Structures are given as structure tokens and as C-alpha cells.
Length: 161
Image (cartoon, helix red, strand yellow):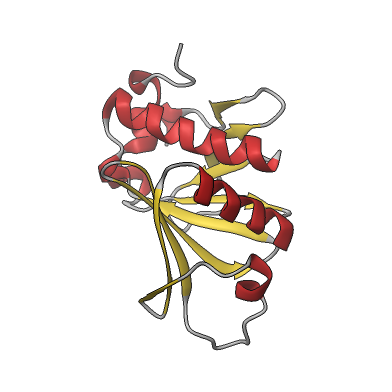
């Protein structure tokens, strides 16, 4: 049984409602959590690329990326958890793991299942909640992985979004 059914949550996957690139985050993180994410990405079988200022480079240790000086080039980790699906992690601070997904790539039940599997894998590895909000709206989560329930669940009423 899937965590979420398309017919129940399709409003959360509508780019016109949520924005094309909703925000996904894990709060209260540390450099060790970032490193655990890096290790997960390296061992998951997912396709990935690390970039600084749009130049692809080897993935350095998380502490090194997070200790770059203010004004340093943009660092991002581009992960493809499934063919045709891209998540972009931006290393802005140790205290929060932020990334975007493209809802246009996550349509129908297969898209819901792909996102649930991805959020669940990250949440289980970190032992933390992984929450999605509309693009630019960090205050109103719509769905997320709950580590206690061990599943992705709605955090808002999809009919009211």
C-alpha cells in the first residue's frame, strides 16, 4: 500500500498551486547530518553531481562545504533518485538541509510513490522529519515524512491548498 494516493494529494503536486519547485527541508540538522546525506547519496545507486559555481567537482566532506566563507560560490548537490526526477540540494547552512524537487517530474501515482520513497529514505537515514511546503512558503507544510509513523503523510488538507 502506498503512503499517499494520487487522487487524495494531487493538489500538492500541482505546479499551479504549489509552484513548480516546492521547498523540501530537514530542520535542526548538523554537519554530521549533511555527511550522512552525502554518504546516502554515494551508496544509494542514485545518479548525482556536485557543483560549485556551476562547475562539476568531486564531492568534498560536508564540513568542508559548510565552512566555505561568506560570498563563496554556490554549492549544490544534484540528485536523480529516479530517471527523469531531479532534487537539488543547496548547502547554505549546517542547521537545515534544503532542497527542491520539480513537480512537473512527479505526476500521477508513480510520481507520488517516487517522492514518498525519496523522502522516506532521507528521513530514515537521518531519523528526522522531511517536510515539503509550497515554493517560498516555509511556514505551511503540506506533506512530509514522519519518522515516528515511518511514512510520508499529509500535513495539510489537500482540498484547502
